[in-house]
Image (cartoon, rainbow, N blue to C red):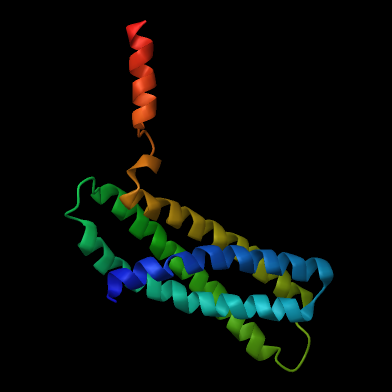
Length: 162
């Protein structure tokens, strides 16, 4: 396994993990569950580390695909910019989560910690989803804006003939 494999293997974890963590924090708020709030914050602390690993393996992944057909430096540059922001956001949320867990390890989490964590989690999951969408466009040209799929092209040609 090399860094490209590692990037491809790990890149889904922060995307799906932030969504799951956000949903768990929402349930923790609704149920006023300290335990679920702690589990959710623990997940975000872990995701902060994983997001950093994904970001650091991104450059070798770019090097591996830049000579392939359909490669677009513009798409990769947008993905890299979004990945940096998303990694910072998830890292900050993870740091907040870890600090909260350590500070309140012997007492209940205050509701404001869970509320603030939920708000930050919404931002983090949005940033990760946007980054993942851009990352998918690197090799999946069919999801790039303005791409006409063969079936759509055939349908357009059929209309022109009538």
